[in-house]
Length: 394
Length: 54
Image: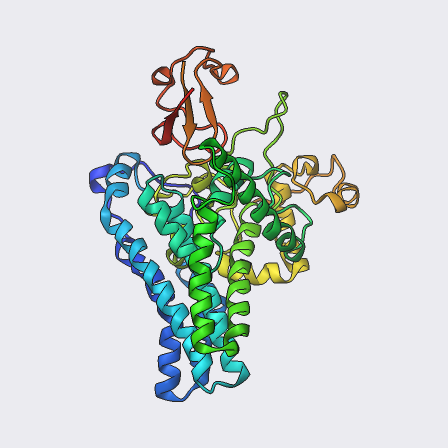
């Protein structure tokens, strides 16, 4: 399929082919509940693994079968597409579903006799919907209205990641694809090293930025106006009530669904900017963020599940653009959608075998222009020394 | 002379300073900054900035 974005068609003729498919993530958000229901009615406990099977097996196959879509809405059609409330409604409607799924999951592991494998399946299923809750929190947290910012706090409370909006908007978008960003992965950095750098780094940056914001109105960080603490308070009520009502049997569920949900976010971040670097300007600032500072994936099915998050290059170039209007841009391309990329990242040598040559191709083989893991810098420079060119195209 | 803050990333545009390296001379009022200009830190469009007190 062509990788050239098509945007020349007239606005009047444009029809969003994906319009009715944007219901898909809502079904995915409820999939663990479906699994619990089907396990109860059929007696087949494999249904408890429905969401991990969907994410790690079915979606990579669907991406491969259905393929990619580089079609873009024409510029003239974007304003009406963005103001169409249908798309907003779908995102808002998903938010209570994450609560329903989380509560049903906690109830199921506490009251049903699943054995450890079924318990783990439900916990990982909810972990993945927690990951999807983070994607929804990302979408609404980027909007500038007060109502949507509140919705982001509410949905981000489910995966216990209330600091995401502050961290992402005021931190990651400013520092993306620079060595200063804990949420941009470096060439040679394994997923595991990245997760250990990103999770604490993101929390610290969010807290510092929130402190600065509160100081503008003369408040200290330990204030009721602290948006991080507001979201964490919702998490505390949700987790605390579940623990009080269902007992300590849900502790492993809480740990697995929360930390694997965070892993979903971290792995997405790892994939989105691996090795890419904004070059430093003579005045010491980094060049502006452009589409080539993020990896793009146009795989249709995974993009539907992730609200076009994989059209990440356009998202960073235009961060307030709504998901339905995100464009396939002239950007470096991932070999597949995120679901398959996730599995590649879990095996660092596999990920590097696939991606390192792609990073080098973005910079014409010039390793000095790449965002390199500092601890491996000498070794990587020696291996891909200046002057050595790669012919691999992206 | 006023200052404007990006609602996405908190970047501040100061009319007094302008952005000379982006061909926006010192003293350029916010309304005279081209509509096509986007936040230098995060890329948000002009419509996403709010005025803040000087």
